[in-house]
Image (tube, rainbow, N blue to C red; front, side):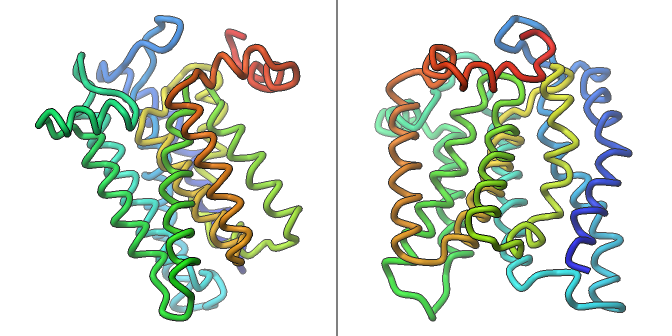
Length: 279
């Protein structure tokens, strides 16, 4: 019954996500997107609410029917993803004023100037959560620190990538498929199924510009991707390669435009436009 969290979250998300996102717009919780259109914001809350509601089904089944409903690492994944979601929501709600710094360089420059931005709070909180869920006395210090780096970098990278509708969701699907097919391991898929369902359901709404993920959504997707990486890449070498790639992409995103790179690269540009209502 490993599949139960994924199916439960898919069903719940399909039932409530459209209403949740449109409810944000009805309450005038909107933000202009890259085209200047007003879009429901932060639609990323629709990744967390279905996951929480799906636990109403999943938890009793785990206790009363079959312990295989939840994988051993499920609790740690839950702590990290919900924690990141909370930090992203704080950043969306309190850090959206004009003039707020953007990117790690901007946030830490503000900190050096004596201003504590919500981005710094989010970065510090994400580091603390990553240090907690990666802790395992059975692994070496190098593996531990690399796991922490992969989690933090993946969480941030999806925020950098999420500058066009559907981009973060598409990257997540490609990464998850690559990890599953490449490793032949489906355990991480079942461990994270509670969150994968809502991501899949929200993606079409993101592509159609019904809702904007915000930091809440992009960071949650990045958090799920990071946990998927560390559950799949269990060797020090694998984690080191992942951390190196994520660090390179993060630095590129801080100093150059990821959107410009995607738009001028054949193949990536077509993939980026796929499914977008205003492509």
